[in-house]
Length: 172
Image (cartoon, rainbow, N blue to C red; front, top):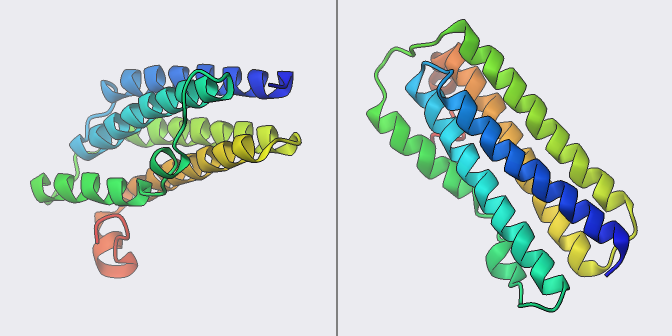
């Protein structure tokens, strides 16, 4: 396995582990229950990314297989939808938003942007097909995480936006 793959996977592994810690720390800093659920969801997603990176790395080293169809399926949008629908069933009509909640979302969106850029840089290096497929999957996941944060922030700022104007893709 080439050194570039090893370095990219090591950086990705550390970044995802730090992301999980980061989201867990933010959960206690937000006041709105919906914001907490989104951050918990993202922390769990980072744990899942770490697991996938470890298993993919092991497969590259010949220490096991990695089922791309099972591990890199694009069902993230469905998982987001299930999480948000469950929260909305519990939701009160009023959002309990603290100004710090929006600031925390901005910081979280920056983290997801940095993750996306990390995988873009990894893809800029010529790769074999397996490595490229894996990094494209991770790139997609980070974009979906960013979108979840952006749409959730918009919901927290103006819940009526989803139900009257936007239609709430994450709630539908």
